[in-house]
Length: 86
Image 1: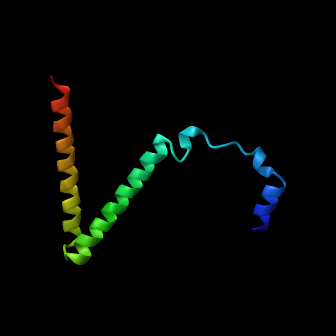
Image 2: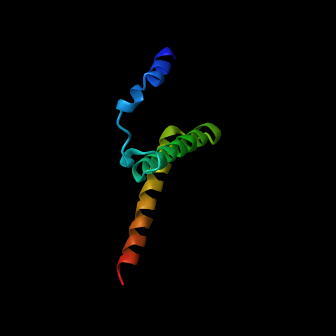
Image 3: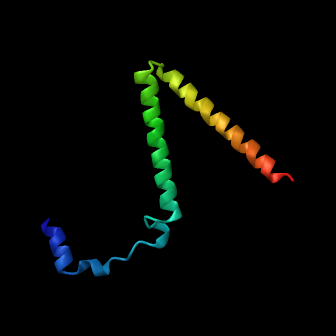
């Protein structure tokens, strides 16, 4: 606490360079990182629900998420192909 107060009182904060806009909290990069983190938390909760509440074995949960990943890639590929060809 004392170090922080001295940091402010001695105006040491003026010698620190500000964060570039690329790494700012509202930048595309940080928004993407936040979305990936939220997705990983959703997957973690989904895995817990499948294994703890529904009693699916861990390998079964992995298989479900693996198949969901494959099918979502297939759907995205088909949609991008359909939009790309006129």
